[in-house]
Length: 168
Image (cartoon, rainbow, N blue to C red):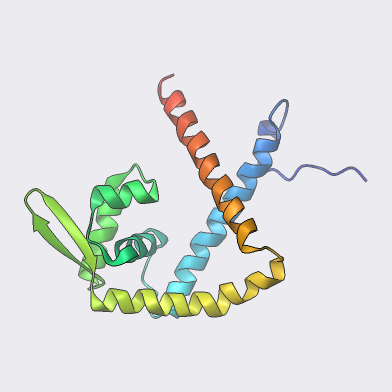
């Protein structure tokens, strides 16, 4: 039996480089599953009202316990549309999960005690529901780091291609 490619758009899977369509479909499925996972994990951690972007922003602000600016958060999350992140940050401040402080013209964000507790609760749910199941995938830590490296490299290729497309 012939193996057929698993793609979301047959018209993008024709000719040279058709395999990229398989990768893109995998990323679509993974992105949507990850987004759904984040919101359900945070809901189980006690914060059902949060969107996936708000969850990403909260974890990023909490990262390494350092104050961060909007530009830092957008850069680290590779988000170009800064006003969506800014809106998420304002909502997180309203929820009491992060605090903001204006220093000159810049606004810096840090996690509140409630925000740190939310991140800790998320981590506990993540360990119980996700990390425990990873052993069934038969992936070593090195395998997972290699996958992560490949995904970062692919994101660089997509960033380069998006700049090229913007110049057309």
